[in-house]
Image 1 (cartoon, helix red, strand yellow):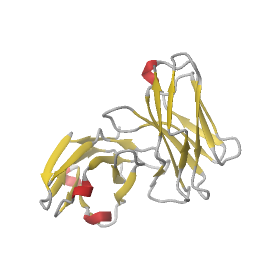
Image 2 (cartoon, one colour):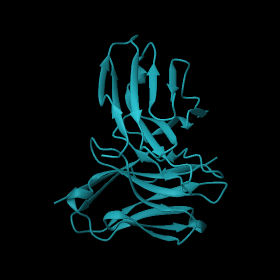
Image 3 (cartoon, chains in turn red, orange):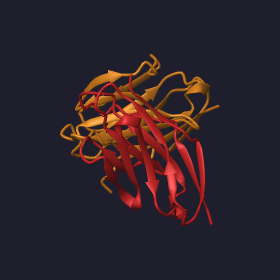
Image 4 (cartoon, one colour):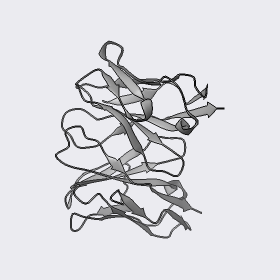
Length: 115
Length: 115
């Protein structure tokens, strides 16, 4: 069965410092992996996606993630945090073959950015 | 605005009442999804439609829940005899069948509070 585990429920960084949000996945197939962000009272927004092309994926707002099959990881990083990055972040996997859009979400990581 | 829209955004009801949520997907998207998100958790898949056909339902979708998409455009999610455990954010998303990556576009959600 496919699943994702977000290793930190809460991450706090200072503005201007690097961000690292960790995600491990479990999948029987070559997975598609995503990071979504959810700001308060806003809909989920796609940050980036991995679909078996380049292992280093660049997304919006300066975020990127690296797919590491040997470590079954898909960690999200950003070199320098901005106050507007404060939000809930979800690592997401699609459950295997076929494209049904049935996404499996991690439990989320709350990113706090301190001035 | 050509995004996914949901109505109402907030609903407060008494236990035992019926509620209905509506979702209007992005117009060219033929797939529509319902997810449920409880406090502190990631969204969980409930059901999805391709055009007017309901192709999959989660075990989370008890017999008190019914979803329809009668003309393959908007969808409704009805909850009968609401219980306090139904309190959650109900998220709608849409995608194109042609999307190879399975990316979903989410609405802002309908928050249900059952008293």
